[in-house]
Length: 169
Image (cartoon, one colour):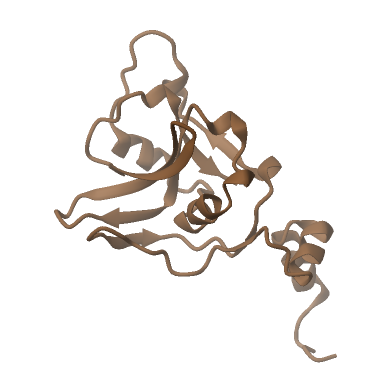
């Protein structure tokens, strides 16, 4: 065997990380739905990457994606939560998607679920610093039928917070 020190348990872990048997076979076929979740994130418009969580080789499978909201966002009536930095802190330790997935979806918009059209989806796995040193996250939004990435400052209040979700897996 070429890799004699690799155990069967490690091989099973790799297959699991690739999305099971189906995912492993897709990976071997160079299926276009694989995203390099470890590649360096790109920054634009005078921004720098502040934090980038690597997520490994990622198979885009919408059934594995979780759109998460903090329970306070789900309450009816006045929304006491308007601070994105609190929402960001609540996502710490959660399996959030990074900007590599967002960029992949922007290049392949047919893969974006139609149900996401009326919401904002934040990819907390990559954070940026603006040229004014503001901490920002990127959000996938649909603007009159066109999918776009929007930079949102974490220290500012976000309008329409009940319609914003965190992308997780």
